[in-house]
Image 1 (cartoon, rainbow, N blue to C red):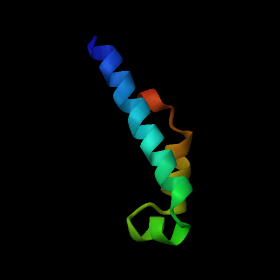
Image 2: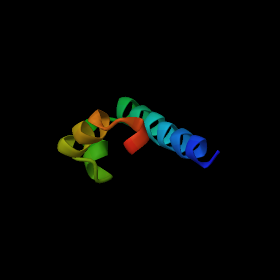
Image 3: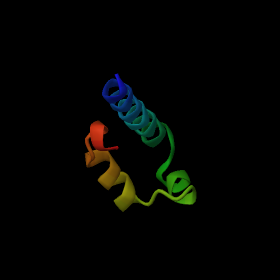
Image 4: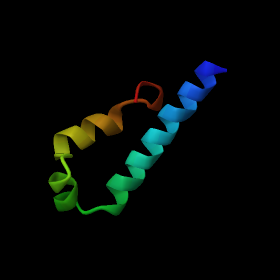
Length: 50
């Protein structure tokens, strides 16, 4: 059960990050500490390793 909860948490974090990236302007992402390199790296990360 713990493994399922962990996978769901990773999936939810990845989903929330994708929503953040797609709804915010790149300038605002930079302001909150997500430069383009970090965004690209996090988008390539599978959700179970998020």
